Image (cartoon, rainbow, N blue to C red; front, side, top):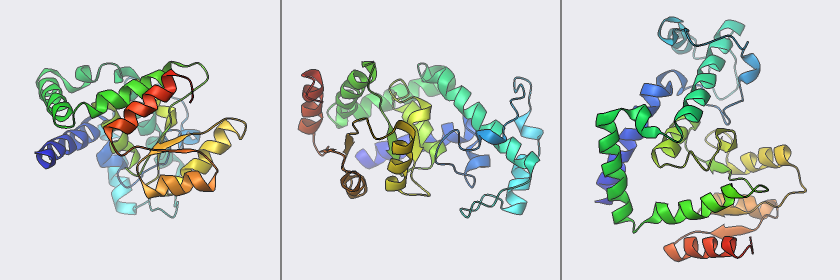
Length: 239
């Protein structure tokens, strides 16, 4: 059952990524962070811009410009790439509180049904996690940051579909696909500085090792009781 639910969600994630977040255009042009190509954006108004006819995908395929080596295309091509990431950011921010509006009525029903089935099967795992994340997000001096091994665009689709867009601002989502989680941690430290307290919450070896290297406390999540304990520690302000 869980595999079948997972496959249904995976299909929904890639469908959303392809339909609304330009994944067909951006799959080979993956970035670590939504603003990584923003310096190539000239800020022009995109309200009437036609992404379907600007010749970007053809150029991307023929020249294979998005290799992990960091080969960059021409100025025009980079600007079109930046436009796509800007639009993705706009869509995320517009619909993070209203994913159903983005999906449309038919897909919205299927999505709500799938979410309910996943919650039932996992004994409300997401609800428990969201309680802790919402508490952190509600504090004025704390932020949630997501570091994922998923490529950035499908990761954003996934965050939206799981209803996590409300607790993860798009600027706080990092994809470790190309550079690994530890390098993402380094970028986060550069951004927020060394005077703040970082707590790494996760279940994988990679984030645990990254946390250890940077002397960050690691809160392991492997069961429902770990999520409850995390929420409890947050409520009592131990964390």
